[in-house]
Image (cartoon, rainbow, N blue to C red; front, side, top):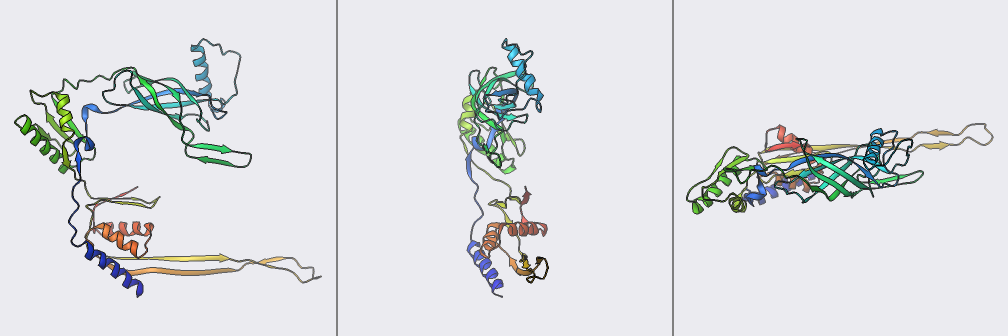
Amino acid sequence: MKIVSRIFAALAALSMCMAHVTPAFAVTSRIKDIASLQAGRDNQLIGYGLIVGLQGTGDGFRASPFTEQSMRAMLQNLGISTQGGQSNAKNTAAVMVTANLPPFASPGSRIDVTVSSLGDATSLRGGTLIMTSLSGADGQIYAVAQGSVVVSGFQAQGQAATVTEGVTTAGRVPGGAIIERELPSHFKDSVNLVLQLRNPDFSTAVRISDVVNRYASARFGGPVAEPKDAQEVVVQKPREADLTRLMADIENLAVDTDTPAKVVINERTGTIVIGADVRVSPVAVSYGTLTVQVTETPQVIQPEPFSRGVTAVQPQTYISTQKTGGALAVINGPDLRTLVAGLNNIGVKPDGIIAILQGIKSAGALQAELVLQ
């Protein structure tokens, strides 16, 4: 009965404290932080290259024959003959090189690249990426990468033990790629601006359109923005406006954002993320756990002296059970944060909270989208 009293007291107190809380207010953000320009998207680049200078942690040529073929081709391009010789040194590794080409990037600017091992290399630490061309989806070369590889993980091993922390077969080359070709861009020739919301929402799209129209009415004498759907807002270019200056003014306008109610649960780590607008209808919740403890204490029995007996082991097993919880509580909190706070006060752990949330959703009392990861 004491546990039942604690449950009702904790939940009743929290419900009374939260009864007069107003709904969560929308967060004010700049348009540049919640939307991106459709004409200014990133482009993915990819390439195949070699990393040299590894301390015996590279690819084995027998397990990764493409590494040896690539190394021979590279040396031949440098005018070095490789016929008749075979190297067994594991100082080279074949890698895939990837990068994101930012919008409006000009030739000569630098971008970061990521390298990932293709063969059986154990570590890329201390290696140097040899000149690698990076191509886009159209097959054209847009950047060339080269430089020292930075690896965050490390590995140490001896004859009987190995310690590994992080990932040692992938790394980054900060500023390692130089852009050689400019992406075709017709931004200045566009007749409108298309803003794409990073988190699609009809309410936020309408608010962006209203804010832009208020600015345009005061500046140009009429509205210019129209929400197309939950993700796109189209802004028509006024005749006397410069497109670059127009975008600079629009992206700094403040908008009250809105998001749908969601509860995100990661069962592997026990992480629970709750949105501010989540609501819970009145529901009764009962939660209990059964703990079974098995203890083995074998006893060694020795034979009597001169009895020609043998030593034996007599098993002894102790089993104890304990059941906690199981009380039925009526939950009528104004939002999900009240429910979680009440469950925390009575000692329910994250795995128990996850099970309760899933049960509340199945009962139809959780007024939010439940996302399981």
